Picture 1 (cartoon, one colour):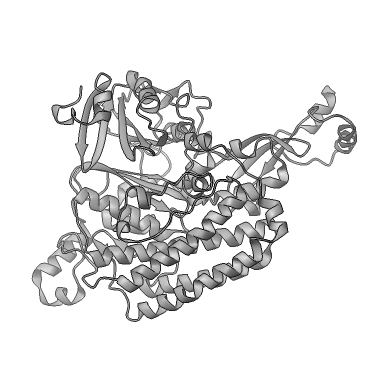
Picture 2 (cartoon, rainbow over the protein chains, first blue to last red):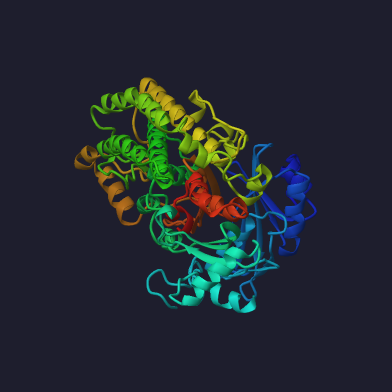
Length: 153
Length: 421
């Protein structure tokens, strides 16, 4: 459900049934969906609303709040000169979400980065391995409970 | 056949002194292609990878069957570091992300923070930012052209490019006191007042630079060794590039007129008159032509900024965010307090999240900044253009010859600091 104030926005209105909340702040549109709806939202954005580019996928750790992790997708429509932020929250106990690789191939490395640095797993990803850190690294450095100095918890 | 495979395919691409390898080579030469493959490990210390990129190439003879880029050798955890420093301190970190275009990073970071603060900065500071960012583009393109040419074998271009780059670095030093890690843009404006006599210095540079670009073109554009090594090489279909996250000159060389400076102008770019060069050939040579033309257009922007530079303050009137002038600190109590507060605890930034994109020399540089209302950013994510571009490497070089890998990689113009962060 999107708020009444965003009914006039065609992008927000098209995602009304999958959106959990939406906001328009500082000139940027943010739509939040349930993790289960992420593929449907991305598919609709790419095929119907002509968002050709998935600019980046990243994470935010809201520790100690629950659901702990936000997976943030930035999309751009080159023809429509629009940008959009799509968000899904996943729990800290079992951080898992469906991979967007089948829709946008650029998601591949970005999702690996989120996995590496936050420990959020992407289901059906073609190669869910660490990308920045060595394969035997323990922990996920961008989590808020990981220290800034020192190498271990 | 099976025993030959066991001895020749090396897991990590190393070389053995085993005599058997030589015999295998003989046998391979006699066999039709497609019989057997070899894995070659290129990098992380290969000179053409400009940093520490590792490529695993599976070869059949000289044809690349499969390419797997391996990144992360330069990962510094800089995004974690951002969360531990105040907004003002973080400016110095941004220089180190894409170290060939420090001012582009400064600009992206400051614009993102100013968007969160909803801070309007004076026009003169905006124009100065444009001018210096375009000088950064020239700086970065010159390093690219010099190293790209040297990779393919044209030594002298490198020396000429670095001659002009040196002059740009001297201009940066004049403004900020630093040649490379400038940190000259700060939240709310510029770090220092522009130095006396900068107009003369920049003018003498833009007067001479177009003729220097002609010189590079004389050396390369119709040089048949250059065209032979670059024309028709490194093709990727445009749809694949968009899907894989490629941005910048790569897209423009494929015929797509895309440029953040035109599509969503920032820092008063809408007041400047310049063209976005495009080509349609979509190969290494056309990317070279696009970047050469970008250098000319950037010179045009710098000249406009130089001639039309508005007078006015170099910082916004925002006490508590912008450091007060030295003189005021000696005479006004408030200025001294603000200085102490900014330096010791920093300033608070309202809660919210923004994504600011700018056109860096390599493509779309994005800064996603989340604030929780404290003095330190809650999260800063850098969408580096090199990271997106590098994802397209397998699509670009699979099925081509190994001799063309160097030219293809060079045409991407990546910086590993920007990729690995």
